[in-house]
Amino acid sequence: MPPNQVNEFNRLIGLMNVANRELSMLIGGQAHIANELGVREAWLVSLTLWQEHIDEIREALRVVFRRPASASRRRLEAVLDWRPLDSDATDGTQAVPEKLIAGLRLGIAGQMIGCWVYLRTCEVVIDELAREFGGVDPLKPALRSELDQTKQELLTIQEHLRWLQMEVVLREPLEEELAEIREWVRERASV
Image (cartoon, rainbow, N blue to C red; front, top):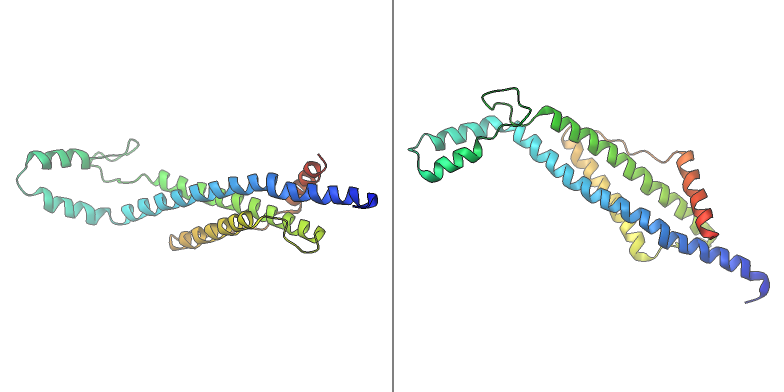
């Protein structure tokens, strides 16, 4: 390599390493959060469906429990006689506390927006790095796939939440958020 190209070569290698090491940890962390969001979304759907169908469930249980009691049926009755700890109702009519559902909805929405913004911030900065490489993506294919799959997972959760009348707006990163990651990348690339 000609001596006059050494500094530029080292700078580009530094940028490529930041993309595939440090940014990969950020992307991996957000992929983990998105996976957890999928679990929390499933929990929210289950609780919502339970709440919507509690009267049907109670009636089905009444029919079953009109029969003579057996030992196994008494054990089943004991298991099914669940009342939430914060239930105000003494007859067990409050099957799922509304606070729990509301908290899940709020938590899922907040985490989704944060995760999306973080992924988009990484993606914008990586696209800027690609311009440094003549348009070539500096990410390894597996990491690019993880980034794309995580974004798709969040979009799928967003669609599912619409079925629950929950609109989560996944915004683009603010300039301050982009500036912070850009600065971090520059610092890490020069190490």
